[in-house]
Length: 110
Length: 509
Image (tube, rainbow over all chains, first blue to last red; front, top):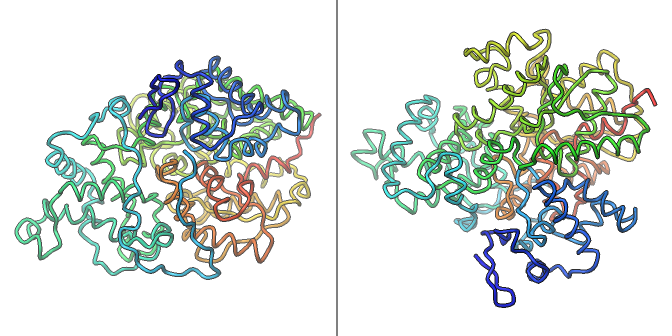
């Protein structure tokens, strides 16, 4: 599978995750979000950017708790919980936000 | 990955047997594993050219190794006792999800190639050639079985349907038709040490974060040790406990129990996974390879006891197979297994379930609880299939049912049972076990959860239940996903040690 953004083709896997995370850019993220029916706001970008930073350091997406804590620090304590993340990414913060951030899908019993 | 569209079954007060809906789930199948994923764990990359011949050869191999498989394939008399016992049948009405019909997909082929009557008069005995259509049905319907073994409880011959599903999957793996979800995970656990693919530094960072959180919540320095040599207990827990919610709340519970009891413990970055998907795929070799990481870690760390966290099939593998696979528990007979045997403290059960561990401390009055801290919760308990039907806890029959319930009743005041026939050895699967916990199977997962959701709804309506405790990472992830489809709050599901965590008194400040 593949998606096309600004005339360039990006390979995705059978579930729509970007195959090469180095190819990711904001326009790709916007299209991936659109396919997920997610309207990207500043709050969404905070999450996506944090995911990418964390991934760059640890080669894995952060645990949900690590993410909620980081978002709580950035956006206010009332937003530091998974309920808020589900509001931003209704299909589930781990999988849907990772997809938009161009990261591989978390696997296992999650 | 936008939510797939399908009709969510209606919750009814009394369970009804659905009208038959032939092929209604024929579209449901998992993604096929890629060449890269398959080859990484030693399977052919894609469907081999002579797949038919190879599949029959593999079936013969399995029949030679496992007499049980042959007995199960030979002894079914089609009495029909199992037909309405499967949650996937009850949720979909697809007749191929009747356990007997699902088994027959393999049994018909077995008869054709391995029995005299089937070789000579195939039509008379319902024997079938292994055609591409048959193979496609295998791929669809052996991936619509969670290997929960509820049907086996009702089978007068005790036929273990799960073993037939496992054989079907093992044959498909051997010809290059593996499913992506399980096989990708097996690659990760072998490469990185856990199903998530969580590398050591990320695990360390996550655990440090948890220490901060618990300190903030309780004022107490509860540690989450990693790779500590000489710690008494090595805790083996599903990697979802490090990553997902509500799983992580049980991990915090385990840590508090160790802290309150003053028992030294450690996690291992090498063996940071209790789950063992080798079981789901029916691959003894894979199961052994995954389990051996735990032996290596235990030997390196010099652990005296091995305790297993809340994970259903992990406990089945640990309780039933670790002894001969690894030497945790008596039975393994190679130099490393013998070394581990002499290292482990034989005054304790090896391995021990975290619930056995906590219940033992409760009985010895080592732990103190503030039960009222759980008063906002009205609790019920969902028995996880592999714990309920494939293992035991404690020293008496039924310990696997009683011990988790005893813990809950010790730490919470309000507890109600779901209706008879939906719990204990007759428990209904969460709908996501056995390697089907993947997004492309959401429809069958939601529909398969119907019987459990109906039972839950009963205690929600009658008793106001707002928390369903369970001791399995798959159950937790599955319910978090499917509860909202039935208009329940996803936060209703959690772990037994999540309840322990809420009520336990840590003593020191």
